[in-house]
Amino acid sequence: CETDKVQKYLEPFRLSLEKLQEVSVRLRKDMKRGLGKHTHHKAPVKMLPTFVRATPDGTEQGDFLALDLGGTNFRVLHVRISEEEKKVIKMDSQICAIPQEIMLGPGVQLFDHIAACLSEFLDSQNLKGQTLPLGFTFSFPCEQKEIDKSILIRWTKGFNCSGVEGEDVVKLLKEAIQRRGDYNIGSVAMVNDTVGTMMSCGYRDQSCEIGMIIGTGTNACYMEEMKNVKRVEGEDGRMCINTEWGGFGDDGALSDIHTQADKEVDKTSINPGVHIFEKMISGMYLGEIVRLVLLDLTKEKLLFKGEVSEALTTPGKFETKFISEIEEPDNGLENAKKILTELDLKWNLVDARVVRLVCDTISSRSARLCAAALATIAKRICDNRGLEHLKTTVGVDGTVYRKHPNFSDELQEVVHLLAPKCEIKFLVSEDGSGKGAAMVTAVAQRPATKELGQTAFSFQQG
Ligand code: BGC
Image (cartoon, rainbow, N blue to C red; front, side):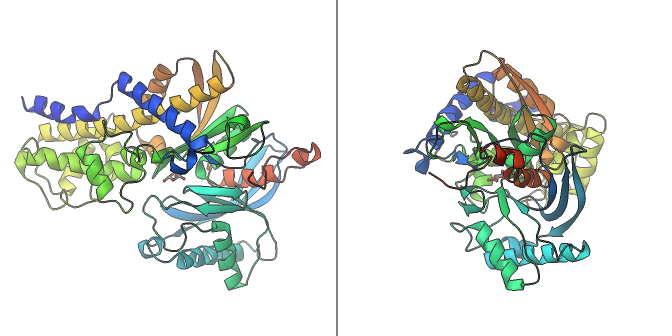
C-alpha cells in the first residue's frame, strides 16, 4: 500500500511516449520561432547562428591554445592538430578552479582570473614568446556576431558575474590580457561546447552534424540549411545552429509536466524563470530534484519513518553523482545505504529501495526529455533534406551522459522510438570543449577552404 502511494506520488515524473511526442511537437514549433527573422527576439529557444559553416575535412593542422569555461572548472590547453597523423593531440593542459566568489563577482575579476591562469600555463609550457591562435569554449548562450565577436545573452549554471551580460566576451578577454601586458594571443574563435563537441567528433566521423551536451547544463547544436536561417543573409549551404534548448519552456510551454519540485528548483536557483528545460534535465539540478522528492515523501511518512535529517533539508546536499551511484546495477543498493547513512538518515531496506526508485524516475525523465529534443532535431534534418531515411552521427559529452549507468541506453532507445526513420549513431566526444575549440579555430584557417574561395566561417552578420 505504501509502495502504491510512492508510485502515485512519482506519476507526474513519468512521461509516456505520447507525452514525449507532444513535447517534441512543441519544441519543433519553438525551433522555428527561434530561426525566424521576426520571431526570434521573443523565442525561448534561441537557435543562435554560430557562423560555423563547415565541419572538418581532415586537412586541418597547427598548434592552438584552447580555453574552456562553462562547467565546474576552467581549463587551459595546448593542442596540436597533425594532418599527417590525422590526430588531435593534447600537448598539455591545466585546470584552474573558479572560486564561488569569482563565479558571482564582477566580470572584470573573472576575466583577470582567466588571463592569470593562461599566463601561468604559458610560462609552464615556455610558450610566452609565441602568438598562437586561441579557441575559446564559452558554454553560455551568446549572440555571435562574428566568429570572434560574441555577446553574452545571459549567464546560466551557477555563474552570475556582473557587467558581462550584453558585452562582447572576446573583448573582455583581450582587455584582461592587455591589462597584464606579459603575453599576446593570435586570432580568437568563440565556440559553444556543443559546437566543439560536434567538431571534434566530426574529425573522426564526417557524418557528425549534431553536438549534444548533458552535463552541468544541457544543450545541442546541428547543421541547419542556410535558407532557413532567416537572420543571416545567404541561401546556400549550411550553418551550425546553437539551439540553446535549455531555454525551452521559459514561456510556459512545459507547464503540464513542470512539477512542484521543478518549480522549487527554479525558484531557488540563481536565475529563476529561465532555462526551465535545462533545470529538469541537467546535472546541476538532478540531485536537488531528488532531494526535494525525498523530503516530500518523508514528510508524507512514506520514507525514513517520517524523520528528516539536517542534510536532507539542506539544498545541494544530495549530489547528482549520488544518483549514478545508487542506480549502479551491481552495487547500487549498497551505495544507497552508505549515502543515506552519510546523510544521517535512519533507513531500512524498503527506504533504500524507494530512494533507488526515486533516482531512477528522475534520471529516466531526464533521459526521455533529452531523447524527445534530440528526435526533434534529427527529424528536422531529415525533413530539411526531403529524406525518407536519415543516417547521422551525434557527438555527445557531459557527465550525466557519460557517468550515469543507463542514461545513454534509455536516451538512445527512446530516440529510436520517437524518430524511427532516423538512424543515429552516438559518438562520445574526446574532449570536445578542448580539442573541439582548437578544431573550430583550425577549420577557420583551413587553406583548402580558402583556396576554394569558400568560407568555413563568415565574419559578418547579415
Ligand atoms: C548553456 C549552453 C551550454 C550548456 C551545456 C547551458 O547552460 O546555456 O550554452 O551549451 O549549458 O554546457
